Amino acid sequence: MSASVMRFVEQPCTLRYRLHGELRIARPDAFVVELGLPEFREVKLEKDAVRPENEARWPAIAATLNGMGFGYRVVTELDLQAGGRSDTIYTVYEHRHSPLPSASDIASLRQILEPGPVNLACIRDQIPAIRREQIFAMVRAGLFAMDFNAAPGPETLVMLPDHARHPQYYGAC
Image (cartoon, rainbow, N blue to C red; front, side):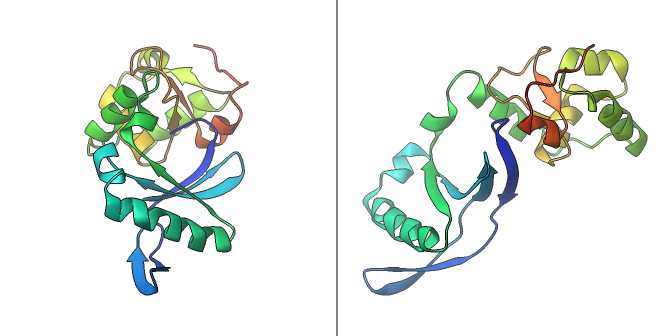
């Protein structure tokens, strides 16, 4: 997820739309507010996105959502592989079920991140009880945000979700 994303909701709704006069149902994968613009997104593998039956339905879904004032976009792995994105996204996904740290450790991390983003190495130095996998799980749970444009490593920036909209603030280690 980009630092410009202000809100994100997985599978937010069921949508009824018409395709060739027939009533159909779609469940967009995500509702995203990025830079203040609300948009529904469908995430597909490129090979599935270009299948004729899917290519036929994307414009019908988009027209329905556009009529309600929302954007619609189909995103594939080709869109997500710029820079370190694919590795970082996969790492967050891979550790999504890691147990979260204690409430006191989460509160300590929030306090460390209050001034602005801090890299993973600094977080581990300041709160050794929090494991790297737990940080990725907390990002996946929406408790914290992360710079997805960099490969996952000690220099990867972690921030409060509200700070993701203000990348000019950087915390010190």
